[in-house]
Length: 294
Image (cartoon, rainbow, N blue to C red; front, side):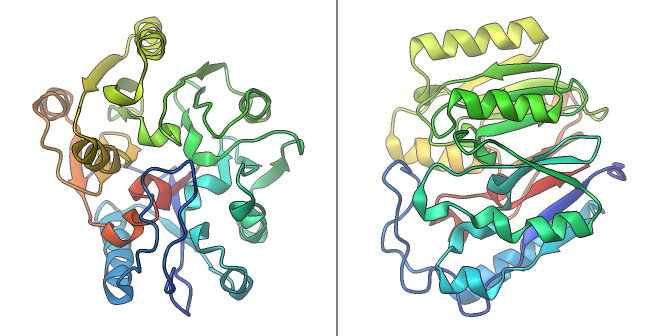
């Protein structure tokens, strides 16, 4: 059994009155949302329970952040995507995010008291910084921050890096609405980043060259998977949006790509999965639903 004693996983509870029960309202820049879809509430609850069960399977401590009534009243249903609200470093410093879209602004306010109760040091970005949690990957062993620049602005990414006291910031541009719909880092059992999985089709030639250079500099393997069919691309990017931990990747679907499977096999990486199909309707998957607390 892998040892995750220094990592806790924050997730949200579900709203009591139903989640997007009147139909999902898609955001213009999110190609992964199903506008008008009504999640099956019974299946949604089963999948939420399944997420908790797979975290328990690996003895990962869980902090469940309450989905407060005010969030329901304001229809802030995407609060469940805990990833977007904050980033945490290994010194128990938490930096709250600033959302780009008006529909999601101030969601993070409802998690601050819970994080302080857990004895984390909470700080905030300047008002003109835009930084969403799904646009980042924090690599704790290397103390490196990977940042997208679709919903982030540059000041948001740079100030996030400064407040987290990282050693280096890498900007990775793609057409994915969040970086975690474009790439996924893979860690070995010692929490070293050893590779990056990417959806090649969301990178221009210039952008993929930049990503290749970043991987070369850091001695990471780059596993490029390309789908020309939009539906297949969407499926892969959804499954790639997983919780990535030392020697473990928890996604929403079984990994079927040979290149990824062989890379995992040769590096003793466990790939596991749990269905979150109803959450997928609002554009989020396992990575979006979880957040690491160190």
